[in-house]
Image (cartoon, rainbow, N blue to C red; front, side):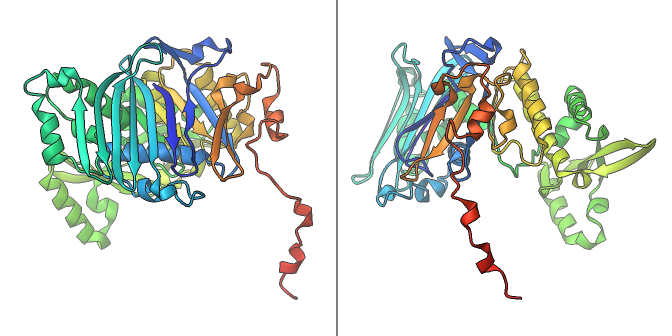
Length: 453
């Protein structure tokens, strides 16, 4: 469960800026509150804002942090993408902090980076402002003096075996542009379990989808999870996509590639035979194909869909389906997962390629369902979603570009609107800001750009 995100001096965020999933004073939709670790957090959030206001930057900063922690390599964005309207921004600290709950324990992870060097990194069991935080590790590094130091909790240092690791990490392994958390992902000693859980939250529980994301596990879910397959088919039928059945087609790799790609077939086959447990993913934005070794034969697996139109059965591949159908397919694992697990799905431009009425009904279904377990956070321009029968006022946030070019985030509940208020109309009329500022288009002299006839 995500509690809050704090950012400074990254992308369009200049000063300390916070986004959170904490409830306001509203008592409406109590089933939108998840109560865990002595705290209530919200299950749903929509972020609105004009183009260039910083909505997607909020998604990007989480993606960059996740990538850094799970891969252990400093993304170039954490060097080059400081706040650009500050001439000294490159020399100033970038800060990223995330507070979240994993297995009913609240954690806070924060990292400070300066010119590609991790100058401070900390992990705490959060006291949630009610009691003292408990530090699990603290890493500091002086940029000028190159003095790197790491301290761990008493539980680690009092364990004879575990106590050897911090010194080894500091002196032999850790580099100044690497995160400590990455090296704690697979420790065997039980005293490191909290660290591994935190890594697992960033790696598995925090799922970020961009407009171009194609989910690579969809084929395996359809093939191996009967309950998921039924769930997916129910959604496809409910949304009148014309899909009557979803199947997985398995065929020899030679049949998939054809005779003209013998070199590619040989290369992939050699890789899989050398690593039989590996599944290779190939494809593009229209279709994903899995290639694997089955009974010593290299095979390709891909989805196909059966349509029953005017009494005739028609076979469609994924690339032959509409953009909207493919995009809906991308969301089905997310909806299935947040119904059944405590994962956090963050989706940029959720309405991309899907009809406004369909995306509204999908969000309404999630909003009204009282048995969900996960969180759904998304950015959007779709004003039809601004409906107080779907969202609480503390579940709608706005991104606004300030005069200095930085992004400001704020929540609808600050406006204290009555629950009967038409917030869609208010938003389009500029009541809450976060909309494009347009000069008078009628004054544009388009005729001067017209080609002389």
